[in-house]
Length: 371
Image 1 (cartoon, rainbow, N blue to C red):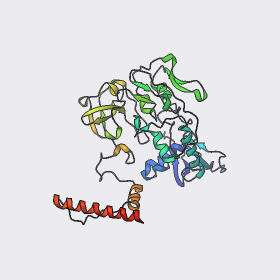
Image 2: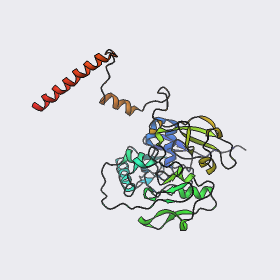
Image 3: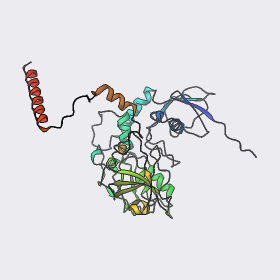
């Protein structure tokens, strides 16, 4: 019997039409557009709590709010309020505005301001710097100033297992770590305690998280609230080199990313997709106890977005295309170097030219002061 395929639904997202299957969310439809054309990646709404591999995630942070200007072909009326794109399913004929809607962009600034009310600005010492989703969100949609005057809430750092440290002061309560533990373990021992502004991620009566997959809460955390104790303060991610590798493991898929500093493996993480999400969780043995290159089969350098600071000085320029905004910035704000000048190597000539240049600079300074 021939299989009947479901009728595709048509959605217009920022002026781009795409057909998706029933049950697809607006976020997934936007990602489908970006996957077909990488130049449209900026259209995808940001996500701080949504995590595709975790079915019940989404709808917490409100970072992905969009404007639905037409609900469907049958009912073209706009939705009265902005809706979270990560949990709102598409309808046939739906029209959505994201980057083209001023109300959406203004709301995103408010969401960033709200998330940073209690989050400390300690990026210079945070291990998550360079791969922090909140950093990216704040850079793209945040404001320079804050209106918040009250004291930030603070918590003491605690160890919630032999390998994981919780810095609750940085937590934005995205619930990802809770959903991850629900999915990969039989008995979750941590969750959200208390209510309102007293809510916090914690374990019940300081019970330790000691299951074989506990390290995955580190990978899913979008900020630096859950960190790897074996990697803390060892290195910056942009100084390390990520390599894809695999091994035969009886507990997990064994597919990981090895982070090198020189010849040393300084940390091991699960592989992430284009959207920074882990598709296959790994065990603690692969993550914490197998940090010798001889234990792995190397596959090659990890593909990193050109816009990420991690990609700096790691790939040949003929393999990585520079972003258009960088080329435009260089063309408008930087003076072209005159390569026609003779290349001087004689030390006496260099010394005399340096003296002449200093004299000219002094004369210009005196003239400017006299005027």
